[in-house]
Length: 116
Figure 1 (cartoon, helix red, strand yellow):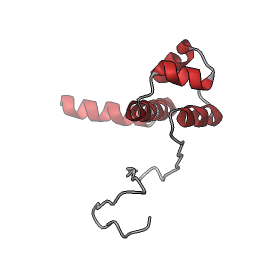
Figure 2 (figure 1 turned 90 degrees about the horizontal axis):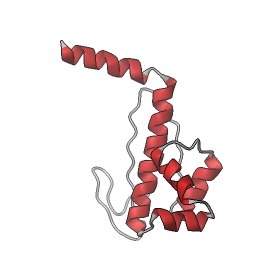
Figure 3 (figure 1 turned 180 degrees about the vertical axis):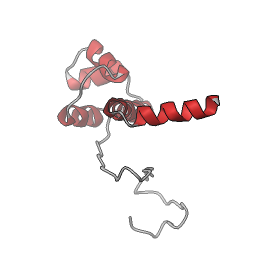
């Protein structure tokens, strides 16, 4: 019974626009944090590169800042990354494979000779 109620609650949440807005913010900040970690960039470094304050970066990372595409691009580039946006059909599940173009990879039907 609890499992059914949980499923119903998830469906109600997913039908809400605010759920998808918060999910997009969370996805962006998680990707930004991952990029910063991979590049050894601290929040202070990011703030300095952007010419912004530490509290601004904290607001961004907590999802409190309502970001424009322009600010998302600037944040990503300041973390030595780039922003990639994609619109998918609601019925599709989207997963990303991030590949270093200088190395080989083998994922399912792709191999190192496959151009994507």
